[in-house]
Structures are given as structure tokens and as C-alpha cells.
Length: 435
Picture (tube, rainbow, N blue to C red):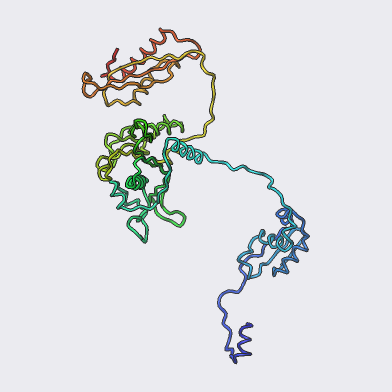
């Protein structure tokens, strides 16, 4: 209105009428200010008359009051930043002086807690680094050309595509970390770094349900992936040993052992990954109501090796880390007295079909042993000579027995070994024992 008045006085303007648009009413409901809350929040006593006087001078209107509270109307120019009781108390504290508020510590000091998931991931990082692997971080964006380069495929229906693609190399979010890990290895190889041990913990992305306002429709899966290639020890003086399948297998056995998952996650043969060697690849199987594959490790396919122009083997792994984290539980260590009586070891050799796995034999041996004397078994020899029938293999197991309350006698030992032998014969009819 003042601007209109100035135009009339100094610019010979003529007012034809006034048009009002919008609503000039204050839509903010009046705020109830409780005087007790001022003392509780600020920790000091501010007289209610002084508090109301401060608000009035700031443009707030007092609609009503009593000994307990007051009804305050917020001016239209403050509706964006004052709409709660705590906002009114902040205005009172600002004008009254922040220096009047005494510095105090919170009544309760809660120590920050580290979740089990964070502890587990930290343990995995420590284990990987202790095994000689270096951590890498790669981009979450990937393209079909990179997947084709390393003989990998993706699920078109579950792909999370980029709307406005700047480059075909970064056209979608990754469904696997293995392609990025291989590409990183290839770049290092081309630049002369032949010994390469690296791993990455990251996320893969799958669009598996409809997008809504509250849900993107994308499932993120935490993954662990890595690659090993070159020498185990970088020594110029000693004969070096190359990385092989058992190197990477040992890392995963150590990982499962450190997490206490040896009996929950098994290592089985795997032959259906097109970029992995068909006979030198293993898969991780998580047991449960329905067993499911959660990862793989092994040697890359010879065709991929030739395509990458490598003159040495490379061993790749990838595992669903969320599945592993779902199996891990907090546990309290329990201690017991060391046994006072010695452990006894007996060897047993037999010829058995090649199709029988080490894990299956371990299970049968443990089940066949009687009582609580069985303390474990391990394989120490595998033999496949000319006199061994085709399709069979010769294995030698070392069986450990111990009684915590007495020294084992020869009769007890022979009974245990006989029980194990009988159990193996029942489980495998084609087995034959060697003296």
C-alpha cells in the first residue's frame, strides 16, 4: 500500500481499484507455551512476564494466559521458522542471553556401540589384509561392454539402468563386483604389476519390485569379491611358489573358521560358471531349510585367460556377504580345563570312488565313532597310481581319540577304529581298506 501511495504522489499515478489474490489469513494454529518447559529446557528460571514481554516485542501476539501456560499467535512473517513450542523457547533464550544458560553435561552418557555387522565386516577386512590382499574400491556403474569383455552376463529384467547415459561404459548399476575386480587386475597387469592380490567389499543392485514413493524397488546386496595372481612370496633369493587353487581355498577356510561357520557353510564343486574353470572352481553352499549357493571361488576359465592375454593363472572369488552376515551370531567364549591324559592318533587308509568328497567322509567317520572319545580326523595322503582302479582314489586319514578322564587302552582304541571301519563299509559298499 505504501508503494501505491508513493506512485500517486510522485508519478501522477491513478488508482483504479485494488485486487486481492490468495489468502492473507494466518493458517498456523496458535502455540501453547508452558512456563514449566522454559525452565526444563534452558535450566534457568525466566519470569513468565519477562518471557511474554520478549515474545511481544518480537511481534508475537498473546491471545490468553494463566499461571501455567499462554496461548501465542505467530506473526505471518515468522510462520516458516516458528511453529512449535521449542521454537518459542529458543526465541526467549536468544533475547534473554545464551550466556545465562549454564553449561551442563547430559544426565546420561551412553557409550557408542558397534553392531555385530560392523564387527564382522571389520574382522573380514583384517583377515583379508592378514592373508596379503589389498583393498580396492571401484565404481558402482558398469556397462555391457565391460561384462562382455570378461565373458559375464547380467539379468536384463533386474538391471537398474541410467536414464541419461553419458557413456556406454557406465549405463547401469552393477549386479556383480567380479567384472570390476578383473578389470582392475587387467590394468595392473598391463602396467607391469604381475603379483596382484586384491579384494573389494561393495554393493550390487537388483530391481526386483515396483517403484513407489517410499520404495525405489531396488534391492542392494553387500558382496565380497577379489582376485589372486602371481607369487605367494615376493622373494628374489628363494624359489617362489605360485598361487594355486588351494591358496584361495585356504583363505576361505580360514574365513569360515574365524566366523564360526564351518558347519553352516560348505565348500562344494561347481561347474556351471562360464567365465570360471569347469574343474577348478568351488561354490559356497549355505545350509538351512533350503540350501542355497552364496558364492564361488576358483581359477578363471582358460578362454578368458587367453582373452586377457595372461601368461599366468588368476584366481577369482565372489560371495554374498549379506548371507554370511545373516549366519553370524554373537557368542561368548567358554573355557575348560586342559585334558591331563594324552591324545592317541591312528591312521586308516582305504580306496574309495572319486565321487566321494572329503566332507562326506568326515561326516561318516564322526558319526561312526562311539562315545565322546572322537576328537577329529584329517586327511594326510591322496594317491592315484597305476594299480588304483580307474574312477577310484586312495586316501589316508588320521583319526584322533582322547579320553579326558583316563588313559586309553589298546582295546578301547581298537573298538573305536573298528566302529569307524564298519560305518564306512555301511556307507560305501565299494570301499576297500589298505593295510
